[in-house]
Length: 211
Ligand code: Z5A
Image 1 (cartoon, protein in one colour):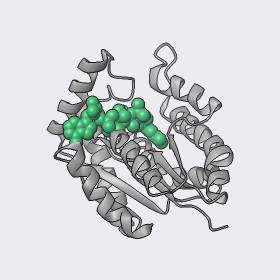
Image 2 (cartoon, helix red, strand yellow; image 1 turned 180 degrees about the vertical axis):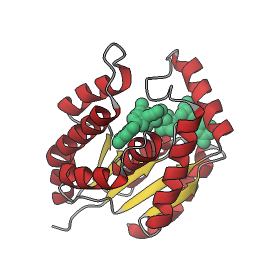
Image 3 (tube, rainbow, N blue to C red; image 1 turned 180 degrees about the horizontal axis):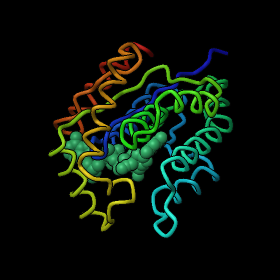
Image 4 (spheres, rainbow, N blue to C red; image 1 turned 90 degrees about the vertical axis):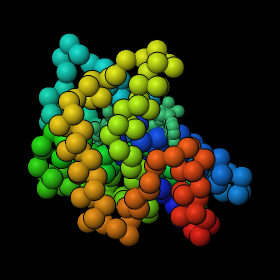
């Protein structure tokens, strides 16, 4: 059986990737493709427990190094128990965030050394890399407007990582751009401005030839 494809979605908060990953899953399923949809951190019982610690632990918040290791522990579990088996069964796996987020947030954002992250991440993933990564990009003002809209609609507050300051978010946007420049064949930059339908159309134009 042919191995499935592994597609990841990346970008800063409010870029709209969670919306688009669900839309792409629906389109692929309508085209007869077996799809597994997951997210990071999360996607297994253990990884969802780790997600709660990473996003909301305020009393004893993870220091930068434990934050990195917790993201990687969650990833190792997801890769071994969900992603690899699905790919081996010929399914397509769509993940809302994966390794590039670690380089952008913990590397460019928190300032941890990229070489160390690379080694530790390869160990966690056992060498697995996405076949294609869609990097959704919007300007900071649009992203902030979308996040405010969602917080108002769902009556939720910003989590621990979302509360990092503007400088942090500027550094991680720069990080994503650097990652895309280093691997332009894998990481495809998507203009995520406009309506959800506009963005979905741009993504489908890119993905359709792979089917
Ligand atoms: N993180 C990390 O530090 N290191 C790592 O290795 C990994 C992750 C894997 C996970 O948080 C956090 O972990 C994340 C990175 C860090 N931190 N932060 N901050 P999460 O999973 O809770 O959240 P997220 O990944 O940042 O994404 P999100 O909050 O789900 O947002 P989104 O995916 O960008 O957008 P959305 O939910 O699709 O849209 C946001 C709102 O905008 C919503 O109300 C939509 O209806 C609306 N929207 C979406 N698209 C549009 C368009 N086109 N027009 C208008 N409005 C739109």
